[in-house]
Length: 150
Image 1 (tube, one colour):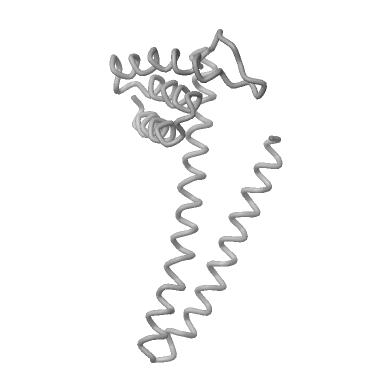
Image 2 (image 1 turned 135 degrees about the vertical axis):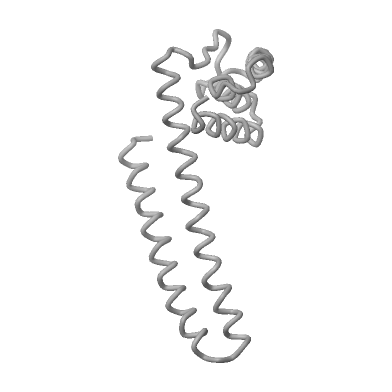
């Protein structure tokens, strides 16, 4: 996907979320000033939900930016994982080849658990092995180590 399209989509989502949060807060203010306990509690829920939504979007944006920075640095160092096996029509390694490569990247993390590069490669291996939950967890660990400068 084109980076300009992604940027425009992100900007649209952020602007829409902020606009929704503003609208929700103004409606909540009306409920807060009513003096009725039930309306005040409902007003609190109206405020908390959009703020939580904006926080979650921000968290995912930071995750994406840190992943991008790590990927660029690793690519400039020539450290991205390479597969020499068979690829699917979409360009991903076959399940069998991904599982075979996974063992190597898991071993790298066991040898160097404080190396963000090893965690990044493990995250890609998890993704190639079709285990998205563990891939995101490994990438979050890589981002944590990357941010701490290890």
